[in-house]
Image (cartoon, rainbow, N blue to C red):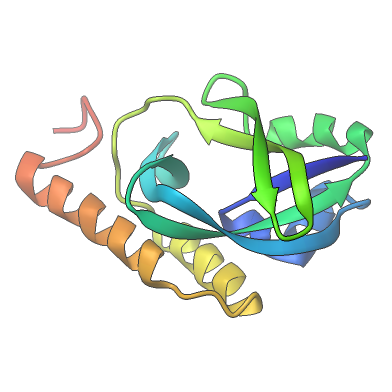
Length: 153
């Protein structure tokens, strides 16, 4: 058994269980001193965690280690790196697996990705403000620098 931390649309139970049938919700938590940012992911943008001054809602799942193989389809190695974080929680200290986006350009997500985040946050009754902040920052960057996708001007 491994612990997997999700902070994106895969916080939604049904969506994660499509990829990892063994996934069981272990706990909800807030990650201190983090910020949610949207970075380029092929033709859209996806959320990732970075150092910041917010508390980012997230979910910790238990799942069979064999299910992690299927997560490569969701978090491809060329864009994401797998890390193990040592988290102090109400339930003790946990080693959790987390997928973090490598440094790609900041970008504004397509509506489909925003809707997935809204559904996941709604399912867990999370405060949506950190997503709104991340969207505002992405929009500001887009307005300041024009297109966020190199080579598309």
